[in-house]
Every structure is written in C-alpha cells, then in structure tokens.
Amino acid sequence: MNAPRWVIHLPTTLTSLDQATALAVALRNSLGHLTVIDFGETTLSEEDKQFVRTRVWCDAPHNGPNRCRLPNDHDGPCTASDH
Image (cartoon, rainbow, N blue to C red):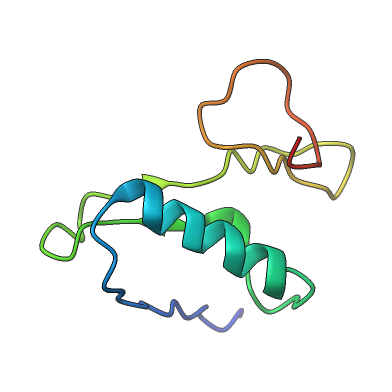
C-alpha cells in the first residue's frame, strides 16, 4: 500500500493570478531539482475560493518520463522545455 502524498498550502500576500503564477515559475526554476516536489501538479487559488483551482502547467507526458513544461492550455505541441 502506498503512503498518502502531502500537499503544502503556501499562502502569499500576492493579489493577482499573474503575480502568483510568476512566483510559481520562480519556485520551479529555483527548486526544480528537488525530486520531492511535483511542480507539474501546481495549482493556484484565491484565498477565499480555495476550492476553485487554476492549473499552472500543462504537465502532459512528453518523450518518456518527461512532462510538458508549458503553461496550461498552451497553443501548439507540448514540449519538455519552457520555450
């Protein structure tokens, strides 16, 4: 039996989705080497609407074990890089 995974809810003082997305990108860029963090599952929500989540990245499978790193709902094909 697999142990349950844990989610860290990290409140911020940011007031826009764009700012929160930029912080998520910065965290992935600086901490992406840590295998204990699943950045592909990152979602954002307003403080008082935590049940309404916005997915940050596409995260579709791409080239074997890799995942798409483009924004969710991106145009064009998936890619394993940010560009």
